[in-house]
Amino acid sequence: MPKSREPLSTRRVLQAALALADSGGADSLSMRHLGRELGVEAMSLYRHVANKEAVLDGIVDLVVDEIDLPGDDGDWKAAMRRRGEAAHRVLTRHPWAPALLMSRTNTGPAMLRYIDFTLGVLRGAGFSWRLADYAWNTMDSYVYGFTLRRLNFPIAAADYADTAAAYEYLLAGGRYPHMAELTRQVAEGNHPGDPDITFGLDLILDGLEHLRDREAGS
Amino acid sequence: MPKSREPLSTRRVLQAALALADSGGADSLSMRHLGRELGVEAMSLYRHVANKEAVLDGIVDLVVDEIDLPGDDGDWKAAMRRRGEAAHRVLTRHPWAPALLMSRTNTGPAMLRYIDFTLGVLRGAGFSWRLADYAWNTMDSYVYGFTLRRLNFPIAAADYADTAAAYEYLLAGGRYPHMAELTRQVAEGNHPGDPDITFGLDLILDGLEHLRDREAGS
DNA sequence: CATCCTTGCTTACGTCGTAAGCTTACGCTG
DNA sequence: CAGCGTAAGCTTACGACGTAAGCAAGGATG
Image 1 (tube, chains in turn cyan, purple, red, green):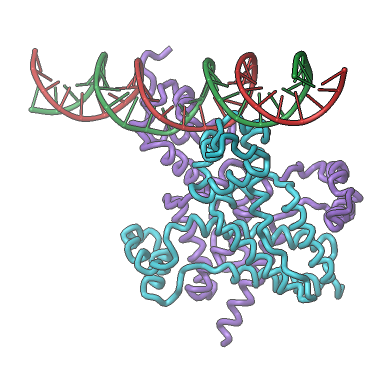
Image 2 (cartoon, helix red, strand yellow; image 1 turned 180 degrees about the vertical axis):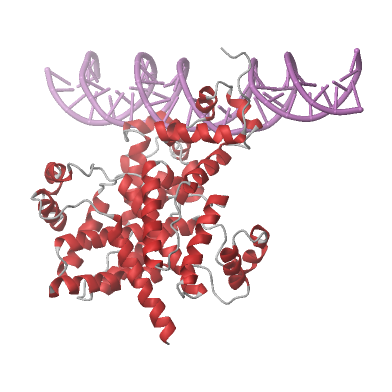
């Protein structure tokens, strides 16, 4: 047994915090728990981290840093779609992250790099500054919003059809006729029900392309 | 002073909780604080409400119930746009609400009514069940996502241009060239910067119309 | 009048973030 | 090598939090 353990550092604290959130969700990330995980008292963490807010900011930026930025090979739409899918994938790996990402102002280096890359792709594709700004805002609102909703969807994707049938009691009263019918369509297998992020992604990208071309033409 | 105050009720508890969240944000909504506001001990609330989760579910549904459903006058796009704008407006009035709305499964009556209405509009406009389902999911992911991000935007809309200039130190190092240039454009007044929900709303609605027509044609 | 049920109160437990001050041990200077 | 400053971690403590368990009072019902 090592009598003097490896010393703490901001980096080590944040990595442990990330692991803790991944394994037990955001609720299990307390300063006391985090200290225990590092073999240290809670108050010792404050030597390396201003407060819990700083820990949350830090691990969000660690997550954003995991998002791969595709190379810009000239096809801006493909690059943007891959970027959105990568973000969705990473955020799904860290289910506690989207809520934090959206409800705080994040100006960590990974986030800035990520936004800068996106603006670069759009500008390279001929978007005006105004349109590029609106474009990435729309994209990200959708991607984060979709991911957060998706993670809290009550039903695991696998047995969606089964569960939809079980929910039918809610809809039996005839008060929500369209929802009832939609549920029936899903239960009967006529429609997968489980939404996929690429639907909205392509929809938005096609729309953006159209706006860019119209702006250029006028 | 009335010796016997008006008795509590689930309704009264939820309304007080809503008022409390509106006035002090989600953090100020604790069972103890809520009891104090009603002239009652915290534990007394549990006669009328299962636990705090139920309170949160309840006030979210109260907020959703404030969203006006436009009459469906045959113009589905206008109805959907008004619906999105109304949701955005209501959620902006209750800034604590979007995070709760997105990160929990809400099956309150107001929410169900709201979704049912939306499905009705889309079905009435000739969307297939599959496309209608994807459509409202995309719309809502964007509307809630946009609203939540917008609420946490660091800069009040009014003085965006001024503040953008102040942020420039962050971008001076040349590490984020596109962000720096975008900030400059905003600071110089060439582009408002402040995003507006209708941009993405119209973008999505136009895309949906296109998909519907293509599906009908094939 | 006796009973029960509803409503609200009291007390208590284990958790949380963190302020304030203390101890320990390492590295530098003289 | 002695002395000391400083950094790292520890201890204690405070005022929140959600809520389990049981109690008290008062009105309704037999």
